[in-house]
Length: 475
Image (cartoon, rainbow, N blue to C red; front, side, top):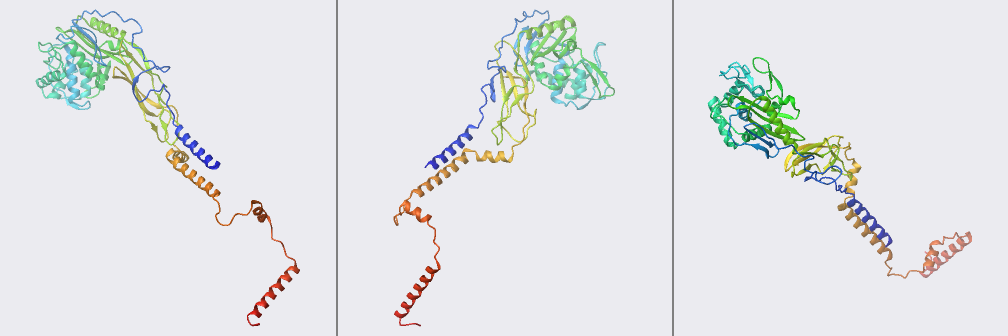
């Protein structure tokens, strides 16, 4: 019985070890899914209150203006934002929208004839019939605001300028630009060519989600290699070279519209989009745009919910009880207004198979603000690990409870049977006393003397003669 109890104890210990070998992630580790972002040293949500009092509400001289958060479209400040006004070359935002929707950037198109109506118009100098790529025409359209580029793109998209204008107005309706109307793809003054500050930032917000558009409007200059001749173009948005956080978008100017600027700036993964319409000069246009953007950013508090090197997942290594730490590749900084909620979500495997190199990407951590994606970073392996060995695989299978329990039960059964058999009584002859059995086992055979062997032989011969005589004499 002591053997049976010992065997049972061994099996129970092995089973408990296999079940207890699973690693429980630490409480501070963000699980897969969404949860409030926390600094690396604690579990408190990043405060959303501004660190310092914001600037006073902007007081601009523009006829209309607006500032929105591109993340959620919330209006931060505005004046007469729904008022329809002439918009000059910011009309070209819709020209770019239809171009990106209908043509491929590397597509080659034919330059259309264009006759300027004023000597002050900006042109690329395209020759009618010249072959040029759409990408280069977009740079010419958005940086220097070339009117012949707008004309060529309109014809390439719709076949004619009137057909393109019809598409512009149809798109405005589909996008909900209720205070917008187009009369040409350029932005020339016309009673039927107007928009509002609100509609302009809505369209710019949509366009900035296109990587090519965002890259173009954030460029101070570019060299156009297609066409009959190489051309260099420079942006008319002087704020791009003055303020590093400014990253767009489009200028405009005509006699009726005054100076117009749809601006954008990004700090700590927060992008704000502004529009000022009807300013008296370029200087006023730029100053009021900066005032709007700086006011907007003063309403935000920066934070870093994800620090470089912080662990966000620890998937199990296959066939082993070890885990691999996955850490953020870079720090993620966001800025939030009062009341906004910062969360993180982790996309990472539960188990890792095979060899892994240090720094290998195995997941992603995403930061959201009020449910809107704000920033992301890859999750990378904190160290290198080798693939599971053959012994790891064998041990993993052998120590599984589903294997240990049947084997342990079998061992216990065999031990119990052996113990029971050893105690079973013999129902035949009664067993001799324990001392006599031991003596019998210990007595060794005695060697006979020659005399004893002779007498034994004579005795055998005598008994044989007696048997012969009894049967009728010798034979």
